[in-house]
Length: 144
Image (cartoon, rainbow, N blue to C red):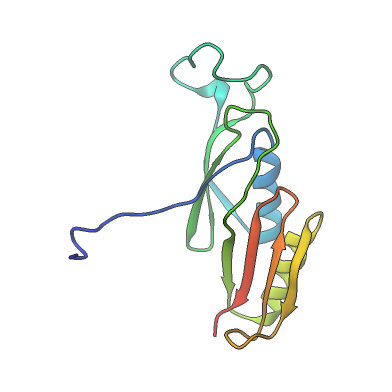
């Protein structure tokens, strides 16, 4: 396929089911995320269909877009107060040095769970896997 015909862009869209604001604030502190857009359910220019938004979600995040480095992620509280389940994927964070890997890994691990401690691998001087406090899996690696 020609590059001019394939201008698709895939971006992760995460549904935090009520903890989106806490997650975004966590990523701001842990990874330097920068919020580009943030819209709450109460700010919607159109009314929501009856029963779509759980009671008490008026101040929850309907949509946000934030960047970590050159990557843009999107997120929402969604329309469910059930515990969010992030299964079957991880986000991969590539950093330029071992000290940066150590810092990012430690920040994401705070309140989360280490799946594979940072260590030297055959493909990277530093690689590890962690699940953050919101249930998102992260793979941290130093770019070779």
